[in-house]
Image 1 (cartoon, one colour):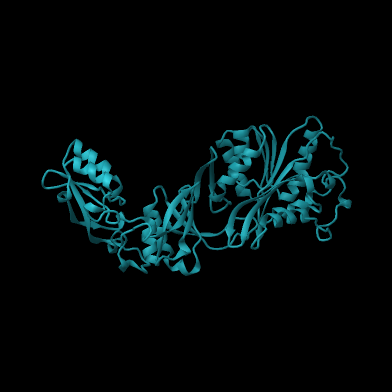
Image 2 (tube, rainbow, N blue to C red; image 1 turned 90 degrees about the horizontal axis):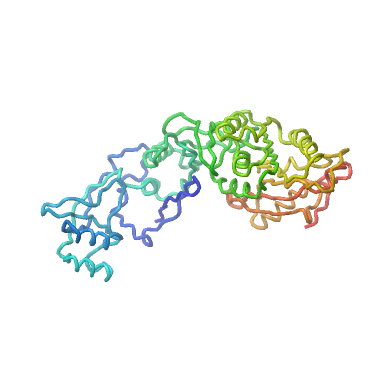
Length: 445
């Protein structure tokens, strides 16, 4: 029977498989079997009486020395104080039955330390201990109730909100799952479950509150910046925090950033704040623009960021074109275009065909580096597939302009999120008529 252990990674919690044969988890320390299949949380049903080993220690210097030797054997449960008073005016210490069975189970080095402190086998015994709901970890509770079901194996923390994506067969347990999470994770006030795929114009998803307060306005710290937003009305994914930081590190100080799908600012604000970049940000969702504007003020980068509320293609044809041409007339500069909308960002790429038709850009002006995100399905060659997709949408091969094809994260079985970074080819920016349509272009791999 498999169990899960929680790890915290960049604001995202995931469950890793745990087997109590290899981890030596004593069934005594797990919730009682009678809670299996519970759908309405009954905390009293978790109470149980167990026998656990303990050791009596003399108070004083010898006790401190003994506790150091026993450190790896002490029983550690949430909200349980393992040290207690005994009738003989000594201190008792509960030991973990998974790690300690008798005096001989101690390693030789630890036994010698204890014997030096006059602690022998006679100091050890067993004692009744009452434990309950408050003493069990989140993963142990859910795994016993759900029978080790892997359908509840991950969730994401967004400020004071926990976001779940439960499988259909677990929906009847959703309120219980939400309440247990609310009880067991400090600082959480709201638990939500996603109830459909991201399929609307603004790329946010519908959700239901399954436990806690109806408070969807939350604040997240990421990449030395602070972001506040209404999680129910904008897109935010804490799993992308590492990629946000990774890409910002690629920006040269004082470069110009054109953020086509800026959201609430995970690229724009760190670029301005940490790299002193000039940022021209855009998003189609008015709610994203609203919170981006507030976050710009909150992070004190108002002088470095301009905000637009346009469709991505319109932004490129108008704002980007105008700003790039104006700046290129006077000075040489580094620039990046970020297209962080993996479900459809590649559809904006044909906009670059003939985008500067009729204009003249000096040869010493560097073309912007484009960072476009996309999803790729299949069982192999994700990076190659992503590059071919980008080339097809651009209507040209990247050849020497390709800088990087990088796998950001696995989204689902046989589905990867990929970032393709390339320098915008000069061959397509002037003459739209000479750019072959993607459907007619034969791609060279």
